[in-house]
Length: 306
Ligand SMILES: Cc1cc2nc3c(=O)[nH]c(=O)nc-3n(C[C@H](O)[C@H](O)[C@H](O)COP(=O)(O)OP(=O)(O)OC[C@H]3O[C@@H](n4cnc5c(N)ncnc54)[C@H](O)[C@@H]3O)c2cc1C
Image (cartoon, rainbow, N blue to C red):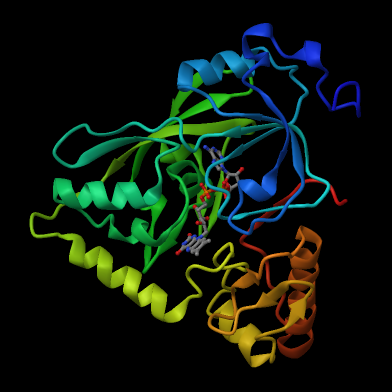
């Protein structure tokens, strides 16, 4: 890192007040649910939004930034990430009710916590968040959803931070929002959102338990994965296409296509990101050959090859 590639920050690029809090060479395998991936040059966990703004302001403007939540939709290649990773998990954790039907949540709040707290507040339908093992920031970036519900259906406004550490408030109309796809102003990241739900006085934890049980029956919960690897093509299910192409159990290194849910790829313990990526490409190649359909990835693939 120090004095390394053009985009690698040197020690004096980081202001002294942050130098001791910036970790270097952090293995991304520790911050992704696939437990794979090489080192991040710089890794920073902010104390709060103001601290994050100050940190970003003092970075060289051309330094690449990657914001992450719980890394549950991320494949980081084995060569790792140049620039700085901002981890919102464990930070930006405000969760409060702002009116009878509205809540405000920081980007680092886990979706599961939003689901449980909304039940306590008698608000719904937020139960669908319970099975999504990411943060609100990741859910906003992905338009995460389940059981026919999507994150952005509930967004009233988002708070974002730009590359100069300045905060702005934006409306859903500022974004192009689709199925697992969100496009908005460049070089801005989510720090929080105001969400709206309905009053559901009778809602209780049983609704969450039911949805989680349905997941356990159909998905390899507890194994290292990123959830669904591919988005469903229009009118189709990626899992059905993969399964009917005979690819369940297909293995490269220590990564394989789940026997339980064909759209999941499992790291059995020692898979490298390169094994997982090779398996993704192989599944795409075989599905295209058998069905004539190009599967697109839902997971975000980032970083340098080893
Ligand atoms: C077992 C399992 C089940 C899953 N089930 C579902 C499901 O039912 N539905 C579903 O939609 N997804 C599902 N997922 C995928 C994943 O949980 C979601 O995509 C989730 O929203 C990702 O959140 P994260 O915090 O982990 O984001 P990360 O994986 O950390 O990041 C994902 C993307 O979001 C960006 N990002 C993260 N935080 C921010 C921020 N604050 N501002 C801007 N960009 C940001 C990252 O740069 C990256 O591009 C599942 C994953 C697993 C492992």
